Image (tube, rainbow, N blue to C red):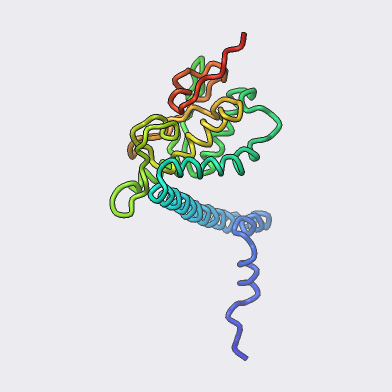
Length: 230
């Protein structure tokens, strides 16, 4: 009978996620080991994130090149209806939350996605300026240029924020975060300004009063602002 290649300890480590191994090390007082395992867990997640965003963007590129840019919007709308909308159905209207709460939710998600954020505030809004860890990273890495470049949308419409160009990955921001929330009876999640070139930040405007969002924020996604309250 051939000798076993895997020892029991190997099998146990294979079954246990790195963050659980890190937790066990910290509990046991092995803080150096725990820190190293935590770093490995983050690196592993970063690798999976890189795989996922490229997988998504490759699929959206195929859809757009084979079926046209409007089909990209349809694909994103399906995701919005079947996944995003139920996920956001918390029983509390997004528009009624304090701007600080909305800004914290957005920042937490972006930072968890390996982004970095600067925060500013004026009388009407909170401004979140992100070094985006997904769509912005693809732009910074030059994935929309050269051989096998990902699709750049070039048909001016709500899905491109009425721009002449928008990287295809960033279209989920217009469709799922702004267009569909308005169609569902609310306001855009935030008013997003994705980067136009490498090195730029993705800027989100979180208005303190959702009813005070400028009309131009709606027209750039092909929508009309809600009627003013009497």
